[in-house]
Amino acid sequence: MIEDCSETLKEGYPRPPSEARKRYCQFLQLNPETIDDYKYWHDSHHIWKEIPEGIRRAGILDMEIYQVKNMAFMIVETPLDFDWDSAFGRLATFERQAEWEAFVGKFQNSEQGLRSEEKWQLVERIFSLEEI
Image (cartoon, rainbow, N blue to C red; front, side, top):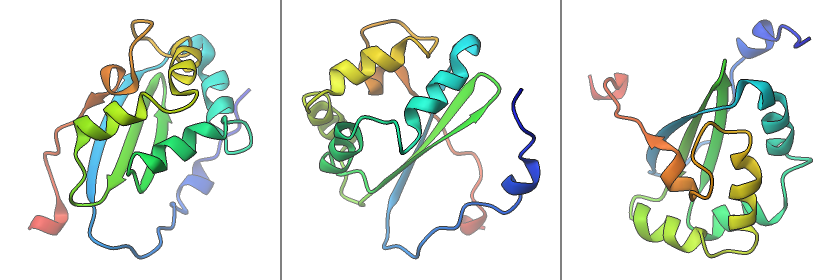
């Protein structure tokens, strides 16, 4: 049984001060039967070391994945001059990246053999408090 961590969640996730960045948000559907496995393999103690190394080499400054029910929601932060298509094209060529995508693909409700940017759906922002 999964512990109720709602009180811990209310503490939030502290963020260090940062330079100007762009933010991208994406989501995908997870296989409800394998969510615990998906979370296990994304834990900092279990993720293959080549994966975060490749993400950083592609120019991504920070990446977070959140989960609610059978949905994964990702936030990607990049420098202002980040080019999505070229960065994800490079990322796909890095060591073990294709192997990782195939491995985690079995935990996701998406077509097998797709690259990361083909599985995750970009989300449109509809509100920003900072812009008001």
